[in-house]
Length: 303
Ligand SMILES: [Zn+2]
Image (cartoon, rainbow, N blue to C red; front, side):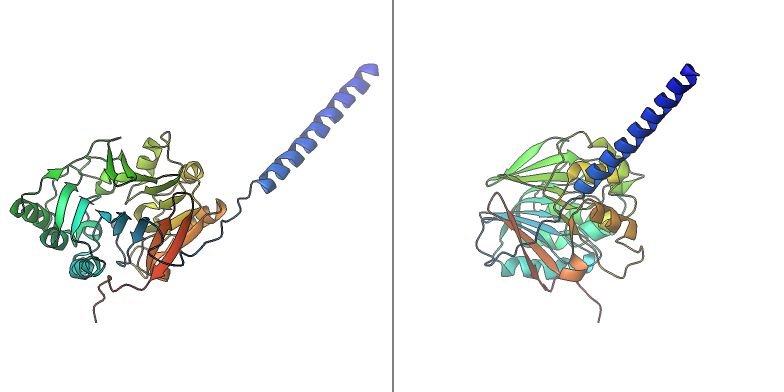
């Protein structure tokens, strides 16, 4: 009888422990729902010496970094966007790029690159070491040769400097069978602010860089919001306040995928999309990030 009482007592204690444990977990989970940061607007575009432009090129990528009027260009939209991008960059006074980076050999990233090479002075040109039998890619090689610009392939963990900004290569691949996975992934640091630019990197790339210092205030999410990028584990480590999606809708792939948008919502990230906002400009004083949106004529639309 005594034994039975003891056993019942033990069982009751275990049940009580389970209930209180669950209560604590619920409490922690409630407390951990991240609060969204308010999006603050930059009152005057010339206020800050550091800016990243996520240029509206439809279903494609084109990112411009400006620090103290030194410029880096990451991707150059679709083929048809090339001339429009040249006009846009000239209109904001750009003559020279310190760095031009083609993240990987897909048309929606390097389409307008031949126009860029023809029209601007370029100090360094970077792309993955994957030879592709594609007209757009071959045009780039030809234009570079004509202007005596080297085709350079940066190494993983190498860094380069743009005025007071550091740009670090977190990933670059060479698998010809999976061009998206060759994407040059960059972490940009300006004083106390960090920006992670994923190009079209896929889940396996995210897995490879998971243990690096990837925490960032802003992420340009991988592959236009595809469900093969932006894993929950990865996003939880990046913990971005702002998630940029470079996308043109409608598109053949249904990007950005709802599952990706849901994951971004769950981590409390503010989602900013080029199809909704046009060109998105993030400016920083080194501690905070401010935003502007411009309806730029940089996305070629057939009339
Ligand atoms: Zn792409």
